Length: 598
Image (cartoon, rainbow, N blue to C red):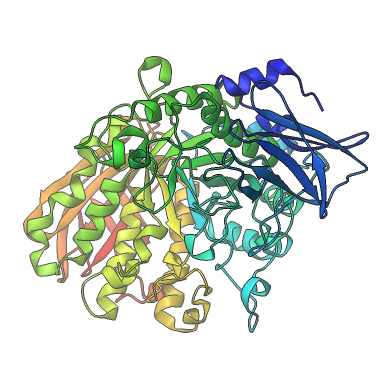
């Protein structure tokens, strides 16, 4: 292990992106070398398997010790004596592995003892701008659980989920799995968003090599992995980062600027070593776990103070984003960076060198909110809400957008996607079939939270698995098959993904038909292949004349009203365009995808 003063200086000056290589616990020939930054401490010792070892302090506040004979699997904590002579037991901020909650000590682990098999995948991956991206967002602990088991025993392991989850994702036609935060966290109900270990894969599902195996298996099966990451705030638990050495190592000294609206602690990015800490954490997950993308949570709070656009800019947060994304883009030009940003801040996905924040994609939360508001509206009143379905294209090309129906939309009394839709069960099902075709054919990459494809009525709860039993009901089973078919069409039709961010690939055919609640648009691959998408969000069957680019016979790629999807079978199997007009029939609350026959 290389531990020298120049590397420590880089860490303290905000220049490090690999601090995990020398801070924390590292196996070496003689045992384990420990290093922690605790500038406010009076004394620091390592408690290793119950025995205490003294650490030496340098003039910069870094404490180190070599514990001879220590080995992988040993349990340790830092025993810190604060400036007020209180004694605190702390987990290692740079720990690679942690005890299973409710325990919280760190565990010595060698991060270099896994043999990867994904060289071919890594060689061909890129930002996927011209590839299909259809993300399945997953909470590991509740996709499925072990029947009859309680507490941690209910979880499937990383290895077991490799056998269960990956084949399902591949069969359903998703291209990526996005994992809710896998960083260590003490409370299951936080879903991983209140972090205590930024370099520690949660032990709920096994050890770090288990997660590497899962990601490796994803790659060998052609599935990318995106990690949800929390750069804004951390948990207040007394064993972790909060007041780490009795002082404010990671947080602001001003109590008024220290805490978030989530009852967590805000990182203070005006401190250079905090910049190094998170920059290194992001690099760590790409370097050691081979993740293909990282989604930054709550970016609004890094752009504006308190995440509110009526507040001043968060200057240190903006500096963190620009500095970090600039570094990550150069270290990993093939890895995707996603911003969960609810603001109208400009150039979120522009390169830093051109005045942007350096992300590759931005979650389009406006699209999500507007379309969900629209389907909540009774069909007879939707003409007044027509603009909510078309508004997204008015700003779409200002950033590179991804269209999410995420976990945040199916919890806390918001209802599931299905239950949000207005009407009886048959109308709700018909509406979301049309909605999912809207999402899949609208320009932009796609994301859906697990369970959306089942037509869940029960909101997601982290302690319960998805309602797989509802697939025994024909309406839900047919929705499941419909989503699978929709995904497959998306994967095989370049017109739906190849030039998402080129305005020439999209054209409104009918954007202002508010009275009939009809929308129509064209997608094309800029190589002469066109797909037409028509949507009837009214509760009545309608005849419709679609303007097309060429006369001749057209075929339905997909009709959401087909009987195998629990529809009424209002189909357009033999339709011919004359005078560049195509007469089609639209069932109530339906969507149709057509293309010209060769």
